[in-house]
Image (cartoon, rainbow, N blue to C red; front, top):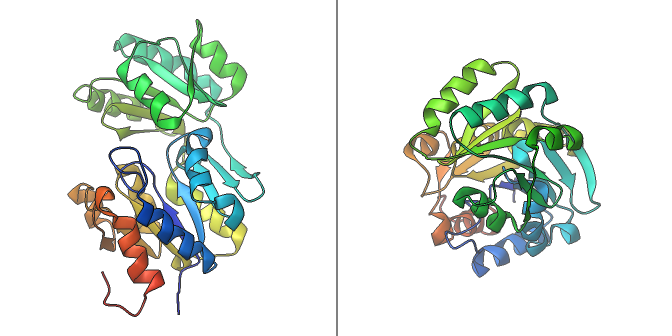
Length: 277
């Protein structure tokens, strides 16, 4: 008998392949899992709108699944489009983040609705975010005022992967107790409300749905997935994840380009009597 009630899946590097597609096998497997009554939650650092096309491809609305975006900053019941939880960045620290980015010569961006918002339009990392999230770019003259008026979940400083670690360490120290600071990609430095991570988001979701961590299997490949992998009853790191991330998980799947999610779900849920991974 299947022991899982919820499957939480990171997108980039986990569910999504290197070419930004989801394999037919993975989609079929997730359909079969949902038909068994197991819920699926997309658990991503992407903005909510940037996950919508994936949620629709997996038919989360039909099966009553969930979207946990912004690393847990927003949680939606996708079946009813009900916002279950939301948390925004402290407006008082946005000017500091902006100045910090400027002083290091790096662009800053955020997400508002269906748009990527920045004072910079011609930047490869910002264009990558626009493409990956299926969003449009809005260039503004005053980032801080725009962010204040909208109320945002996070800011992202983009730049040279060799330079961001030093800035990350600096901002982690200066924003301690005020915001979370981490790299979701080598070229993305994210600043989010204090305490936000995927484990906290899933804890909130489980509380609202009457589930326990033992009911949860979670898949991820990034450093921001480690809390989720450790929180879940079964944490599965992808084969393309760094060794540190794999060590934090209970199981290691095949890579995102080799149907790692599908193969693991086939063994653990669709055919649970097979030899474990």
